[in-house]
Amino acid sequence: MQLSEELQWRGFWNQTTFTNDKLIDSENFTLYLGTDPSADSLHVGHLAVYMMVRHFLERGHKVFLLVGGGTGMIGDMRDTEERSLLSYAEIEHNKRALKAQVLQIFAGRDFTLVDNADWLGNLELLPFLRDIGKNFNMADLIGREFFKARIDNGKGLSFAEFTYTLLQGYDFWHLFKHHGVNLQIGGSDQWGNMTAGTELLRRKADKTGHVITVPLITDASGKKFGKSEGNAVWLNADKTSPYEMYQFWMNVMDDDAVRFLKIFTFLSLDEIEEIRKQFETAPHERLAQKILAREVVTLVHGEKAYQEALNITEQLFAGNIKNLSVKELKQGLRSVPNYQVQAEDNLNIVDLLVTAGVVNSKRQAREDVQNGAIYVNGDRIQDLDYTLSDADKLENELTVIRRGKKKYFVLTY
Image (cartoon, rainbow, N blue to C red; front, side, top):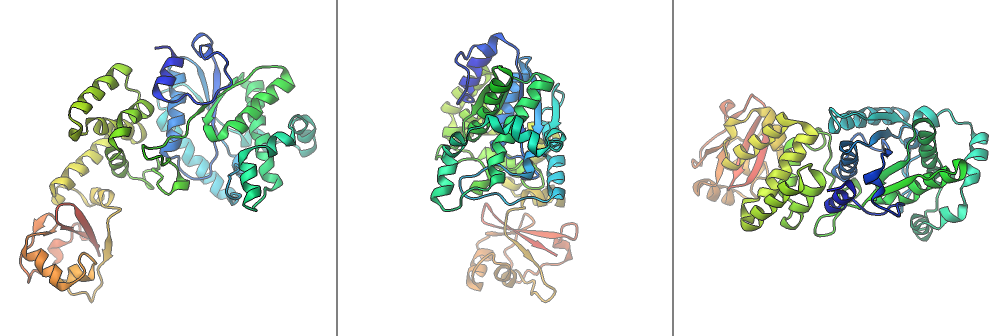
């Protein structure tokens, strides 16, 4: 497939200034993708846009990846309310973290990493307003949907927020002037800011720049991937562990699995088509989800982290707690209920199950123990007089309680 065909087949193609999609097949572009350091990690919603850029890179186009140390000091406009300003220290911390993640995603590829603080920080106000600000029409800015939403909800917009579009437009102008950048790629929510850059190129240099946006990635229920939705899957292992990321992809709905293989992996059309056929024949085997989880976790965290996530998954499913280290258990059980054991706690299994919140009553605790539903570190406990001892403290740090087949609880000391 030509690049234009592949991008559309994979579901990347959304809005664009191209009147002829085939131009990206016949011309070499120098493109850029920018991300502001509003957090110290990208999430999987961002990852989709970076995947699209990787496809351009693999086809020989030149790529600049921008971390917005300058624009991050202002903050992009939202349709709800103005962003809280981050401290300079937070911005610097976030920049370092994002740069490290970008380097991992593009490991071994030839690209240029830039920071717009290097040029935006040197701008002088009056020259900027004369040379750049005069090229922007306020009627265009206030006609955008986010502006209408902010007026309707009574929040309004600050002058600082208005300048964000000018600054992003200037990024395109600067990168064009110094590096020949003539294409910008971004999320669909950035369309207005991105086309501001193409307009600036046209007005200041009578040159044509182009924009392509990636559609908002949602699951089959319409729920989007993003931190504003409260369901962000972060690329930072401290925020979302490799195991948790693995589980996220393993649990995507069947209606999404093959579609996400197209977006979030570099598997070929033929490979994905073969997976689709096998998946439709035996969906219960979750082949598409397994391959999706493998490919994304390996891309983001590396092969070792993927193997560790797979091992944790298999051992927890089998209940083989003692086959895992405490470090692995902390990763695999980070999101399960946790109880800090107190010195005065009665460690008899019945009393402890109630105290730790595993069950609601001693009667239920006794029934569960007698029925063989309670496991301590993978061992079934059916003795009502069983009392936890130091031998039950894995590496003297924690004890894992399992109720039934899947409900885990962690006791820490």
